[in-house]
Amino acid sequence: MITRRAALWLPAILAACGRHESHEFAPLRYDYLLPLQLNVSTIQIEQRFIPSGVAPDVSQYDPVGPIRALRAMAEDRLQALGTADLAVFVIQDASLVRHSDTISGNFAVALDIFNAPNTRAAYAQARVSSSYSGDLDDLPARLYNMTRDMMDRMNVEFEFQVRRSLGAWLVSGQVERAPVEQQPLTVQPPGTPPPPPAPLLQTR
Image (tube, rainbow, N blue to C red; front, side, top):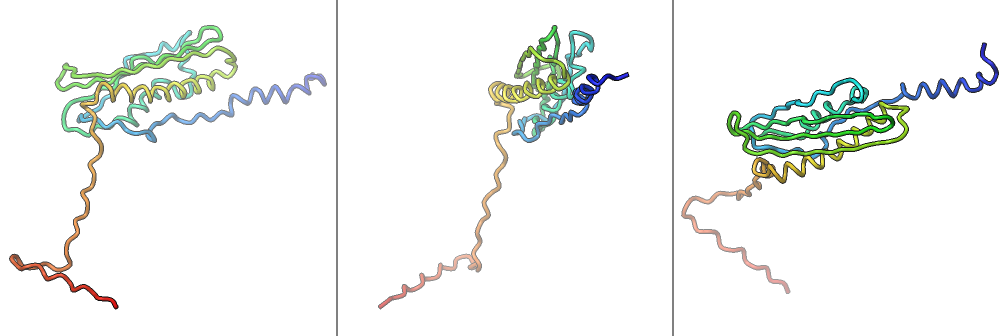
């Protein structure tokens, strides 16, 4: 039997429970950012970090997931425009761990350039970290926001490190179109002297 006091609180309780189900988490994509065009023929993505899936790991509760977000960054921003060499995007760390009311995140990636099998010619590395302490009642939303913010910083840091360490493998801008050449309306035979200039009009 529901008492009158409980009946008054019931709508608020149901609303609070429904808040977790009403979230819509947009995918994290980065194709709106300037692409990094590499003078390589192939780009590969290699995942070297495997989340444990058990406490204190909480990445499995993230609606987008750090690994998926880092893969999206590589897919959206790296372009292969060359005819040789290999670029390997490496996910080194994509951890989200919880200790009590604190969440710590660490993302780390590398971009390796190979100009021969097993011969790394150059590389760039980028890392970002973050922590949050406080209300964790809505854990998925907190993890999503944390991943989104860290990925915003990762995009900036990754581009900076690539331009600093792999400038020799970046395509130096797009090829500009040649200007349209203007052709005369009439073509004079070879050796024909140019026509005399038109007489000046005299005004009174």
